[in-house]
Image (tube, rainbow, N blue to C red; front, top):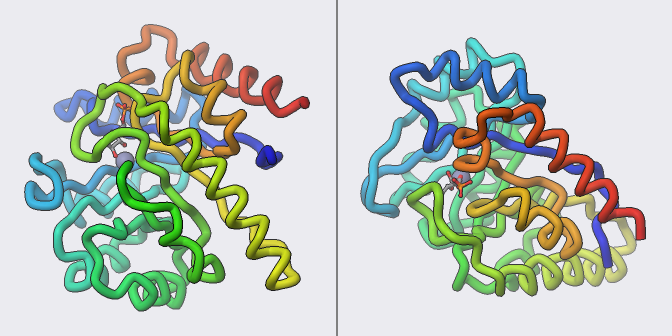
Length: 233
Ligand code: DX5
Ligand code: ZN
């Protein structure tokens, strides 16, 4: 079952030029992306450290498109409140670094912010089964988190399809439409876009592909066109 939602594109700045971050963010916005994706990495949950709460606040002030904060941090339960205060438009927590997932998602929602759950490649998609009412966004990691520029893990295509089936099943049982976005993160580019959209993803994160491109606007419009043709089935 395809996901007929319009494709949305997030620019991950993980591999951008941090000494020219303002220009790098402007470049992504001019290229036509829908969101800025900030990879918060604490050097514990993932090996490297990037940036934290204050960076989100600064970028939020200067960006006229929504900010998605992808929390790759060890102690989500303890740190979440401080990320809620940053003004991020959507906060994605990792199932693997959160003791009370339901409570943390509730905290995000009750703060008027969209809530997402990220699943590492080996984490079963069944994690979403009982919490779909709280989820605006399921982020299926298509690489192990922590680095940009990795190779896309093909078997995650089954996981995307399973997510669509679970949402469909739950909607039927609950007698209501669950319109949760399905995002994919890691190794997304001109080659892998067709597969992930055909499998049912409707949000993609572009990091290395975008910042390594000499014509980012051309890349973004190619990606959109490819997605649109894939959805005409
Ligand atoms: C990896 C991050 C991704 C990454 C994007 O842990 O969550 O957002 O920056 O990956 P690439 O560079 O493959 O698009
Ligand atoms: Zn990310």
